[in-house]
Length: 84
Image 1 (tube, rainbow, N blue to C red):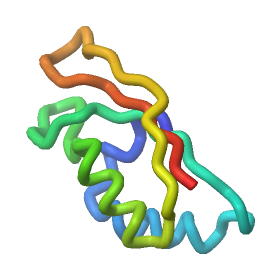
Image 2 (cartoon, helix red, strand yellow; image 1 turned 90 degrees about the vertical axis):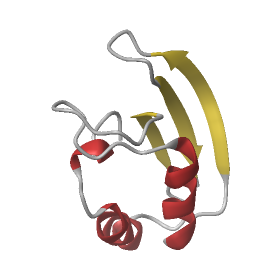
Image 3 (cartoon, helix red, strand yellow; image 1 turned 60 degrees about the vertical axis):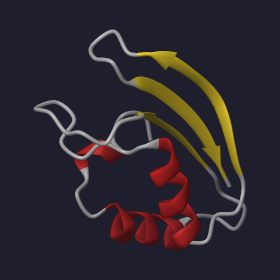
């Protein structure tokens, strides 16, 4: 889910549905902006800590940050996270 979850207002419902349709040992790779202030291009941003909390709520248990870098568009960092 590269830069897509920040377009979804009700993330918990979507993640629950996705979790329910995944294979038994399925996982996510998430790429998101680490910010909580919206703008025109990122209407529902997702802090790293919030992402972990949401994925835990739908049953995921393992989280590994893959990488992080500064965005060229704003002051936020962009993170990638493996979730299983």
